[in-house]
Image 1 (tube, rainbow, N blue to C red):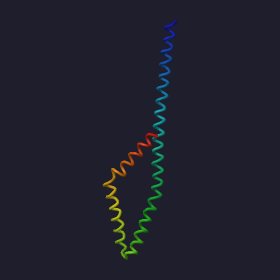
Image 2 (image 1 turned 30 degrees about the vertical axis):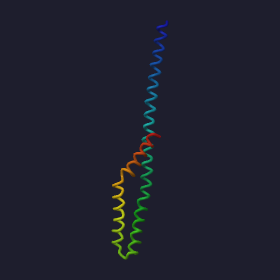
Image 3 (image 1 turned 60 degrees about the vertical axis):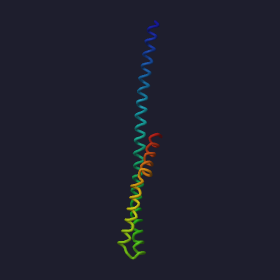
Length: 115
């Protein structure tokens, strides 16, 4: 009688361990799905913002170039001045990308994955 009771308790423990493993597997799967959907929705929201911001920024730059061309009485020169400005900005970002861009992106990814 005692051996049967021990066998039943061992089988019960094994069954509960299998259920626990199954539940933990589902939990991991659901957490992964949540993280992927969260990342995708954030990426999509940034894409929508960029789609609205890019035309605004392009038209703003065009307006600045025309205004600057009127002020210096040289329309092509104004476009060269603006392109030179963006070249300088791009070079500064290229040389400082590890400090400003890369670390900010790494921190953002880490923060989102640890939520």
